[in-house]
Image (cartoon, rainbow, N blue to C red; front, top):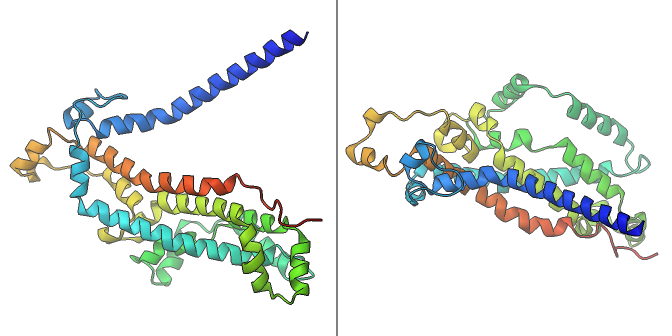
Length: 295
């Protein structure tokens, strides 16, 4: 009986491992294919000969990127958007979630604001009203049109609020006895032990700002101000006119195609997120408030 249970456990473990390996393989296949295309010649990429290994290995696509001013301009806009927008979003989220986590005896209007947040989360104003608001505020073709419309995320506020609620009340009570103000409690006590939650919200915010492209399409008219993902989205819609190419550019087409060039640009655009995620990952596995208070 014991042996049969042991065999069943090993079989179940083996099946789980196989399923996980297949899931990981399915997730990695598109990325590996994109990497292979970016290192292949234009002829091989355009003819569909590239699968998971480069054909006629070349660095032409990456050499082309280094000379592409429009790509790097869009890249820097996205970097600024993530830094400024992410910082603003985290600050507003914390400042709103902290009072919302207090009891009604401490914040009498809490329930009114809470229901307002829930209503805003369930019922969106829509694209046209949002565009009209952005237009009336004079933000069209402005960098702030890429930041402000998505600066507040109700789900992030709720996640942060619920985390603040889980912090032992004895910490706040001890601070109040010592004469600490609400701002002192927030910045000196609550935030230092809230790093796991802040790291999670930061990761969500950074990925959202980095990957969002639609605002750049509808709010930005100047091509020098569009974010990177909007730039990459436009690449799929552009058709290159061979009659406008010089002889040297036509010769270069044999070494690089729009497919391999776009694949290389997509891979470069993935680098910041791949760098940021491991840095924040270490906070996600830490205990939330272990050791914060001893009873």
